[in-house]
Length: 143
Image (tube, helix red, strand yellow):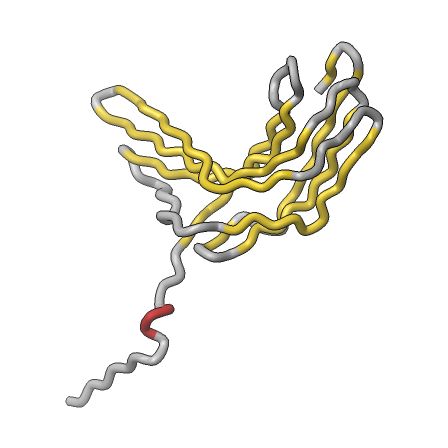
């Protein structure tokens, strides 16, 4: 993002987009600050709930967990290599439903004092681990 006295740039990636409760998301990101302001890089898991009924749409977003980096002064940069954020207990993503959508995003952002936030949103799919409690169970049938 260009700011009158310089610029702040962010690039980021994660190795996959599907996760379950307890997984850690490894973030690789680069932040560069050439403006005169001190900035702080952050990342957060965001839930977006969309309700559709009677032609109306309501959207609620919620920050579920977050991590932050070090302050970046003018002329400096910071790199995250494997910085982690843990997926806490969440309901699975709801995909393909006509009246309710639950989506998750990893937001990687930098707040720039006196300017807009620079935000990258990477989509996440949160699933559940089925069968964890039934690994030792068995079933038999005889005819």
